[in-house]
Image 1 (cartoon, rainbow over the protein chains, first blue to last red):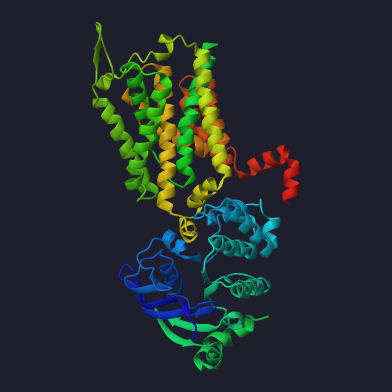
Image 2 (image 1 turned 120 degrees about the horizontal axis):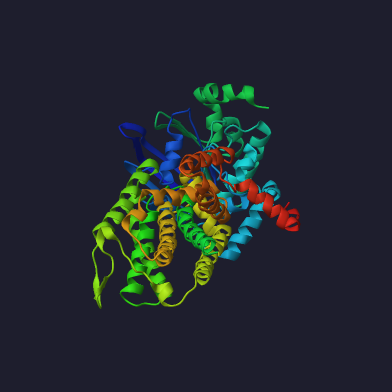
Amino acid sequence: MSAEILKVSGLATSYGKIEALKGVDLRVESGKVTCLLGPNGAGKTTLMMTIAGILQARRGSILLEGKQLVGLSPANIVTQGVALVPENRLVFPQMSVRENLLAGAYQRNDKVGIAGDIERMYTRFPRLRERSEQLAGTLSGGEQQMLAVARALMSRPRLLLMDEPSLGLAPMVVADIFRIISELNRDGTSIFLVEQNAHMALQVAHHFYLMEQGKVTFDGTPGELAEDEVIQRAYLGTSRRSDP
Amino acid sequence: MDFYLGLIQIIGVHTLLGLSAYCVLQTGQVSLAQAGFFAIGAYVAGMLTVLGHWPLIPALIVAAVLGGATACAVGFPALRVKGLMLVVATTAFGEAVRLFFFNFNYQLERGELKIGPHGGEGFRQIRYFPENGWSTLEVAIFIWVIVVIVMAALWWMDRTRAGAVLRAVGQDEFASQSSGINITAVKVTAMTVGGVIAGIGGGLFAHYTTHIEHVQFGVALASFAIAYPILGGLSNVFGTLIAVIFIQGFLIEGLRFMGDWRNLLFGGLIVLAMNVRPRGLIDENTSALFKRALWPRKDRAGA
């Protein structure tokens, strides 16, 4: 087993009295893509937001290369090298593409480095260069997703959290997003991905978790996932119809 | 002529008041405390020149610093609440400041006269300008030099990363947090900058009116402060300036001939303006249009 970048153990998070995470244990390997599957309401987004520090954990620990993240502010967690691409993209709609990227570099002070990184984002996402001065709210869904990813990358994360990047996007665009995910991973970023599109995820992820009702119920490699009968029926069977 | 110069002074000072709220509104916060910071600036600067015989500019600097410090202190607890709760909290603060000056008595004997703030009767004889032989024109120019400096500073800030970060917090706090933005720090900073600008505006106000009293700094003034940038639009500083000219120049002075009907029309016209231009008189599209007209080549290069 290779080194882990993130280790979550016994993590519980509640909304008032309702416990959304009931003791979650999982690990994200360094330099790999780890994917979390699960139905709506399983607690996937809650987990992402707890790791990012936006929600407070009630119990348990989140270790980033051995350093405890529980209790740190969201800004501090970004400083530690974790960036979240939130569900539904959430770009800043009334700001230009360039300003969105600048906002993502909030924690950095090296003007030259920031300018260089913006240039790198434009090379990786050519559409963003074309739309540089356009308001982010006027971009298409796919372009907004690219922008959300680029904005997160502006903080130079070691671990990128992605919450359902394919949500509501056309199949062609989804393929594009997954191509970018594997490119980013090849360049050395560890990725923890929440997805409902198991077919696409199977092509990029090295390890899978399945979460149901606040608990991890499956933990295995892509091969084991594809063989699991329950998962086949629930995730691969239903999504095959929508697969191009 | 003096009437118009007086109007120009009013527009200048109200632009500063509006810009102080503009900073805070950029981060999505509606603060009705700006009139309070404005009042602090007015009383402090007035007392320094009248009682302390300070020159005006150092007095304005102290007013700015105190306005900013108060805003920073108010910002930390107040910004823990959002939306309507923040409106209530900041209104309460503004009223507390007003009532403080209602009860504030600090007079010194100067020959046969007593000078200084005198509670409910106000603070009379802030005669720095006439005593130093400034003409109305010179005062108007002085005010506008400061307005231009503040506008230029904010214009520059809007174009830097700091401006992007402010607006990011205003547009989506959750996304800002996931981008690593410390939203409390950003909001308190915006509030502090707003307090500095309001403090300067208040200091100038005290000196051109020569007589200040608590009623001038009530909820009405606080509402004007946020009405200017909201009506003018938050895409750049000129929106606030245009809204001040529209309200102070056109609605208040221009419609004076209508007598009592003016107040009715006043509200109606603001409602109409907000309906016709829901994102402000100068919204993002208007400023993009100006940008294209002024720098056509740069735009093409960017495309």
